[in-house]
Amino acid sequence: MSRRSEEKDGRGKAASRTGEPYVPHRGWHGPGGGRVGYLDPPTMWRATTVQACGMWPFAAGSGSPMTGVPLGQHLFTGATVCGDPVNWFTRARYISNPSLFMLGMPGLGKSTLVNRMLIGLAATGVVPLVLGDLKPDYADTVRALGGQVISIGRGRGGINVLDPGAMGEAAAKIGGEAGEVLKAETHGRVLNMVAALITIVRGRPMDDHEQSVLSACLHHLRERTPAGGTVLLPDLLRVLTEGPDRVRAVTLDRGDDARYRDAVDPLHRSLLGILDGPLGGTFAAETSTRINPDAPAVCIDISGIGEADTQLTAAAMLAAWSDGLGTVAASHALADAGLAPRRWFFTVLDELWRPLRAASGIVDRIDALTRLNRSLGLGDAKITHTLKDADALGTDSDRAKARGFVERAGMVVCAGLPRTEMEELGKVVGLSRREIELVSSWSSPAGWGVSGEHEEPPGRGRFLIKVGGRPGIPIKVVITEAERRLHDTNTRWTPDDGGVGQSVADAAARVARAAGEGAHDRSGATAEVARWTA
Image 1 (cartoon, rainbow, N blue to C red):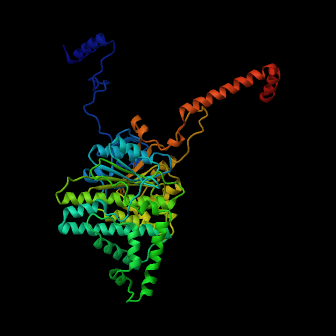
Image 2 (image 1 turned 135 degrees about the horizontal axis):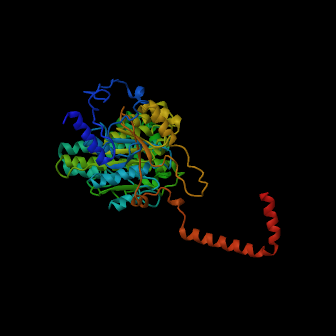
Image 3 (image 1 turned 30 degrees about the vertical axis):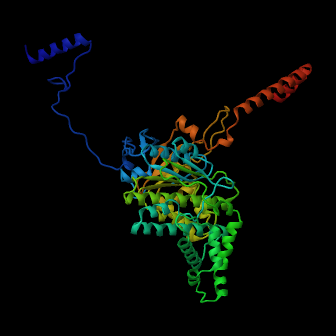
């Protein structure tokens, strides 16, 4: 049998099995059979994704980061996105500074995302420190983690700003040269905190010679106070009044009492303003509750301070930051000396705009507090609304320093912001036009909800993560029911179910009574409705 007849037989057999004619993959032999020996390769062209996107729209970006706390899903690909400042600095090495700066309009979930980082990091052994919880947003979470919650405010508790705290205890425990170095750091931190309180009371920064006088007074107090003794702000005022030789030497009084009084009287008046003013009851007495350095999490709750009390709020936040960061420095010093295990910390500095607007020069105090701590083992998250919070400061120097917080951050996270704000942020961070349009669309308000159902804003739970010059990572965060119970930033807007039910029942009773009273004139009511609907 010839090959052609075999193919015919093969075609016949295939046709009998499938009911369709058999066609070899290279065609039949012979004229008109379509037989080919090879296929010509297609022409290849190279182009950028911008040029060839219409012909080949299936461009794939790089994979989503999977190191750190699970944050949510990539907005476009649906892939899981993980990240936090601590793990991206220590494990992934994506960033060179373990810090996060978050901006966004109110109500879009900024503190919710940071709360998720806090829970995830606590599960890995990192100690969260919420230094100044204003609403409070994090107190319930810290309690659920078995941590320590400290309340600060009038009648609630206070912080002695002259107390060396955990740093002083660690310096005494370490001893030697390392202990003396830690004492010097403690002195600098206390000096900055007292200077910050004076700046808040005055509304302007201290003069240079006044800081020298204040430093000499603190040294004099430490030398004259026995070990374990407590030093308070009234003691500092007494040293100024007495005028010991060490303090007089700094004022250059040259033995003239009048020159000494002229030099220290402005500082004396400012300290009296602290003691007799709105800050005295909170910062002039002993610390009510010290931070426990072994706690798995710490929250300093200042929600009891009224919204209108801006001076006390700013002072309480700065005092909380100073105390908390001092605890971190003490923990690292003990670990360096081999007296305690190494621990990592994650600090949350929420509502940054509140202390920034308290007084001119307060930016320097915040910068000093954060720079005095040792960066190793400490990640931080600073949260505010917009860059305009920095523009509202009094001087060009303060505005530039406040913007520096954003520039130095390893991660910048944006929630919904207006377009003008995003364009201004793009000058600092480096945002593409597409990223500006995306985040700007998240600042739109919720729909009108014609069905009567609750509608959320389109930007709630959506964030853009920027790291250096890399393309931003847009994510969508969906919280669990446990997170929803622990973190409700609108608790005062949550209705009482019993009260609402009673109100509904009362309203239904009134409608029923009105319907019964008007039954005798039902025809008139029907005619009235007909006129309105015609």
